[in-house]
Image (tube, rainbow, N blue to C red):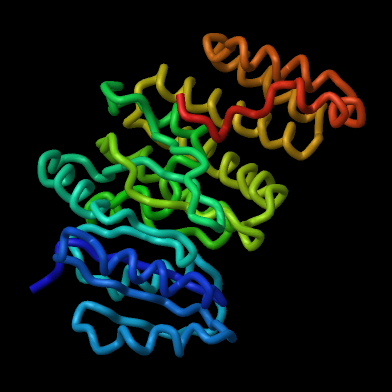
Length: 316
């Protein structure tokens, strides 16, 4: 009999973390799950660490040559038998009641293609640094796509489950969007699916020296933005106003990323383009960002403690 949920864990040279990720799944209060690990060509002692789990009937580990996280996750999708899918990074941890909370919400809201919980950020000592929610409790989920665009870190792997039906609509992970392939994937889910929010933390995202560099995230985010601007033009199912809001949100995201890359003039260009597309996107934060973009980079670095930071990572 197929399990209710499949937890797909891609890993590459994360021997110091992957065992903890697996044990966080084994500690779940809901037991109707399987674990599918795709070892993406690890050269450390990952294989030895995973050996003690291979006797379990709900545990599978497949090795492949190094091809990247998207290919690994997509292989996991092909092997998974669950009705729901959850993607967990091998350096992150599920909280004990994560599957119970997410799967209960999926049962209560059968039309939702994506059930999203909260993300806790933790340091190497497991101290919780902050908690991010994808949106405020009580907010209608039918028009959240443009708002979620600027919530990059509220939609990390482990924070949501997805249904098979939603997966068929949005497609699999896109290796061309790496290192922001998870961001692209979750936003495509939000574009084509109904969403439901669980007002509880479900995953702990570990901050450590091996995390993707910030500059790479900014550059990857620009690729994703250009891709989604094209998708919006083809999304006739979205009302006209929602398409305009979505375009403006992606232009704001591009501006935020260029600001983060210290490309002041490009940041200013896209803040102004967003305003032209949808003037109501302007707010105090955007005004502060536009003003900051007019400050030369070297001066801006000195004034950084006193200036507005991009809002892409904050809960709203």
